[in-house]
Image 1 (tube, rainbow, N blue to C red):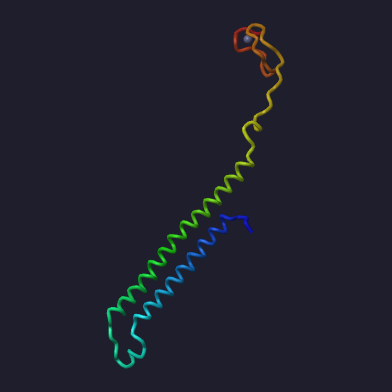
Image 2 (image 1 turned 135 degrees about the vertical axis):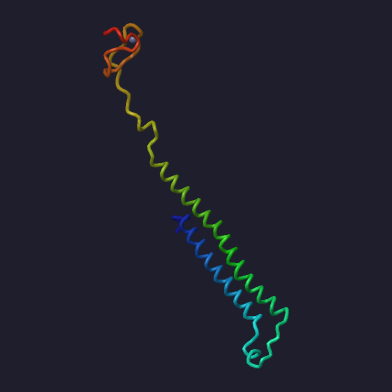
Length: 137
Ligand SMILES: [Zn+2]
């Protein structure tokens, strides 16, 4: 139920955005319809354009356009938040499964001989100490 919260928030952002856009358009159309002359007025040729009617039509257009725009704008914020949670969870998952540098490092080889001149300790990888490279031991 609370797994993949980022994914769910993103899905909700998209759903909520579309619902708000549809609602804005429906309210807009309703307001425009209120401002329009009724079919009776048209039928009887008594269409009177009042400032109130014109105002309602403009309001309807405004609600449809700006309502949709702000629905989209606010859903961006929610969507971005969901994305943030999702990527954060991904980073946490990736970093916990990566072995640390300490574990990758090979175990150091045992010391097999010590240079008699400088006392530097060596493994059996080399027969020559770096302190006097021209002299073979
Ligand atoms: Zn040496």
